[in-house]
Length: 488
Image (cartoon, rainbow, N blue to C red; front, side):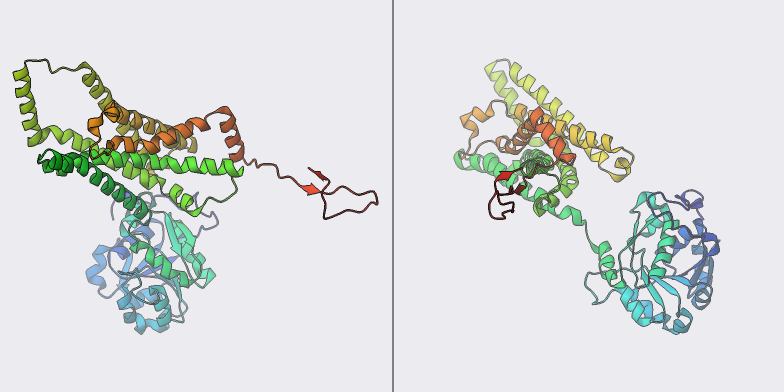
């Protein structure tokens, strides 16, 4: 057994994030595992380190005994089944039928199915349901399939802590939940065994929370790249008969990346502005946001990380610009022209503009790096809510402001130069400024005392007074339901 991480349970027998009532006596319980693959070996190691007695059922125990911890007993499958009432079935679906010879011995026992499918909707029924159909006298529990072998070895600190569990038998479900809790994980009850179809699909999903942000980033990149290609390559080729296609691999991409990063960063804070407007309009925080806004708010982390990624690529591309052979030729040509004119190439305004532009870009990238680092679960979990909110909200808005200044310094007076409007198209940076400037102005508007106090009251639970209409009694003493004499 390894003598470092796996020498003892990482979280012990208690977990403050889980139900404290799930505290079984691990030392008095024997757990069986059928299988000798990577998952079975990691699971046995985790169980042994957590104080359980482990019996491994293998078709070739002598050959596989050295693969498991010395504290675990490796024997034949039939013997392992007889020695425990809780058995983890760590074999593939196509091998389930090999256990049919032990149907009588498995009767009345809890079978924990940890398998996954290789393709979605490959079978009409889940693996757990198929196992239950083969052994109707046993109780099948689906669980631990979303936990990788690496997570079992390194502990919950390096992976997802949640273990999804489902079963038709509540007692068996609770038993498996107790085991998951003792191993340091958080058991999540997913209902009856029918839910195994959904649980088995979870590992097959490829970054489900990243699909919309990635498509958004790709769409923005394609749009800005096409726009920059028309301005930087196509325009000189048509009007001046100059071949500028060499700019496509580096320069056009480097012009596109900051546009995508800047717009993506603004899209992180735009839904917060829209949510504030929504709450101010309805004078309550209890009205549900529209689905599109709710989804947008949930994807802000991924959008922000993609913004940082594009900004980092822009910095790398900018660093490599002087290394291009084409840039060297251009510098030589400029030097020759300068020598012929015998004039000073130093332009004070351009020097200051470049210095400020680069400095602001470095500061913006530094703040984006801080935002990206603190969004990682291992870092954000160590921060208090106020610290996390200050970094992600306050410093994030500062990053947006600095990025705006960086863009304005880059543009300088180019927005007023008619030569910059190629094919009557405005410079690219003017397009990227629209959304961020609107967000900054909206944020400043919300900082006004009248608006900030009202928004704070709404978010503290205040709602606009609702007028209740009722009718005063007439002279005859009766109440009328059709007319209103006074309103409170």
